[in-house]
Amino acid sequence: MSSNDGRKPAQLVPVTLAASAYWVGVNVAGAAFTDAAGFAWSADQRSHGSWGYVGGATKSTRAGIASTQDDKLFQTQRTGKTFSYVFKNAPAGSYVIGLGFAEIDHVKAGKRQFDVLVDGAPVLYDHDVQAEVGRLTADTHTVTVQHAGGDLTVKLAGNTGQSDPILSTLKVLEDPHPIAKG
Image 1 (spheres, helix red, strand yellow):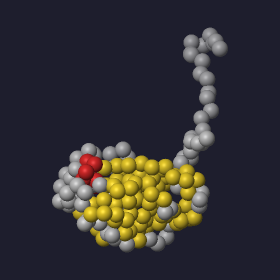
Image 2 (cartoon, rainbow, N blue to C red; image 1 turned 180 degrees about the vertical axis):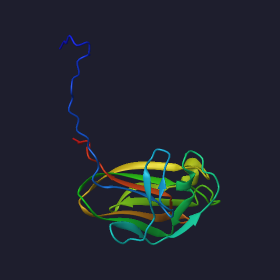
Image 3 (cartoon, rainbow, N blue to C red; image 1 turned 135 degrees about the vertical axis):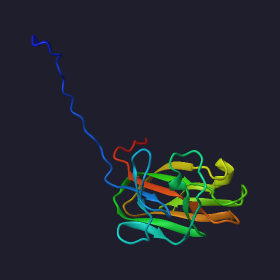
Image 4 (tube, rainbow, N blue to C red; image 1 turned 135 degrees about the horizontal axis):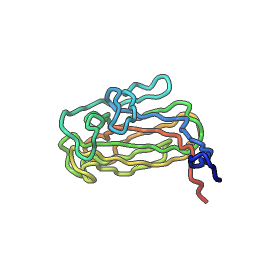
């Protein structure tokens, strides 16, 4: 392409943006919050409407949390022998699940081990935040799961040790471009 008007030629390239149809971020046991990256986290809520928790109790601290710019997300948590989050009528597809933890109690390594299950399948087994990152430190994990459609359930269950499972943040994102496995 060339032109004699002194401007450089432009070429238009079509772009298709893929946005997730299902996108929920929960500040577990906390209020609505916008993090340093601009992501808007929803306040925790009991299971009614489109999503929420079933069971558990809440705990919090004012102490600073290492390995994050967003202390507020990790200063609150849900805990209990067994508790879950239910996301109602989630469409069938591939989902990216983000899990965030912080050990805010004085618990020794090996004394709080728990499993995380999505739709009944384990995605974290014998997880021990204290052993992995230590106390007052953000511990984040991302897993990808296939969901058959209907209610998507994230369940935390105590496995061994004396202390109950904990959870500070939870993201459930439908993956608009799942990678085909073959």
